[in-house]
Length: 94
Length: 495
Image 1 (cartoon, rainbow over the protein chains, first blue to last red):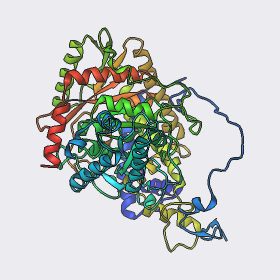
Image 2 (image 1 turned 30 degrees about the vertical axis):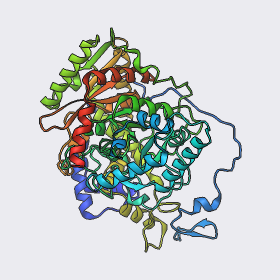
Image 3 (image 1 turned 60 degrees about the vertical axis):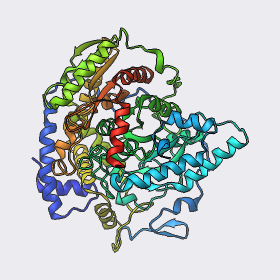
Image 4 (image 1 turned 120 degrees about the horizontal axis):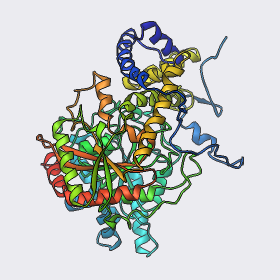
């Protein structure tokens, strides 16, 4: 069971503002999904190494070279608000 | 013109090389077909006409100068809208990326253009590839060409439907938990998920990075092999890309090697929850495989039944992290009217993401949050290991494995939208191979009484795509549904 308070807390962590209706709905739906997921508790995983990905590659390294990837204005084309060649955002902090 | 759109990628390439048709004629024919069927199917988000005609002109000029041509010259392709094609939209069927123009090219598509392929369009999908019906698109509902009241499957539903409706001979999808194989099954086409690491993920907008793979759709196994061949390979830009040679899949298609092969039928994925008509069709496929000389043995993968819960923790956890980048700062939608940055983030994400994406971000954030990490995320990673171990153990006894691709045939539009869990269970047979990173293919194997296609899934050991493809090729030849597919789909969408 996941309460409305927990839904609100998780929404805050995920930087989502949810409507009252969404909070109700997600509380119900996530509870149902988590009940289903709880069957994992049947499995004995003592000593089992967690698997992060399917292939055994580790620490893929490359030379640390400076390369020109993009022109600044190419990247800024997608910016919702650009000014003086920078990304403009609303006020941060006081 | 109508004859051209019926052709396979292989045939189109041949006609182009023999100078019977120009690349421009090919492009014209497929845009004409798109014009006819698209109002009914709604498979595409945008057409890439400028690019298609530019690529066609370059190809036609090469022909006139007798320059060397790529191995799939003249083959038109539709690309899922989650892959970046430079200077074109990459929306992921999400409002948050509605106006995003890709500033670079994905490696998978770049490889195909270098080999001579032509980009026709970007296809509809479940938002951020999250879904099994393509109904989670923010833009449109794609219909299954076999029956316009049913879903095409998902998340690559647009790519699957477009190939079934002959808007292109081949298309690209992506598969995280079945998003190529499941829609292939629903739309009566072939769909392949390669080994994790076989195809570069560079330029593929991430959903769950430890699972995502790009995979081809086609109307036959040969074309599937052809596209996989020319998009695969090591890419230094993707650190999970495997630095191993790509075998010549095409030359190995014909080796007819089902004789004497041991094929495991996964017991846990043929029992409860599988529709009886689907089961019957798989039993019929077993007969065909036996006639071809394969030995069928029932095998048990005891942990495979936990695959769906494992997947919905791991995929959502990875998604919650991957989708943190959509904050309205550097690209994508930004909410208006907020005075500070934090409300700008939350309002942007509230407005930009659809219900299923939010639900998964919530689930994934919850699974990673303090106090629940061990119980959910770590537990799921451990069970993933056990599922993978089950596959490795069984592949010591068998060469290939089979299951139905999906427990059902295509379901009606709207029938599962209200119940996320029932939607998730549509991927019960495809998720296991994804968790283990194994290559798997869905090939059409029959029809139910409503005349909707059924798919057979074949799974192979890691990096054994040549075995997978040659088995599917031999099966397809004997099953011989291809002409039936062509005729019936034409009747629905054109007639």
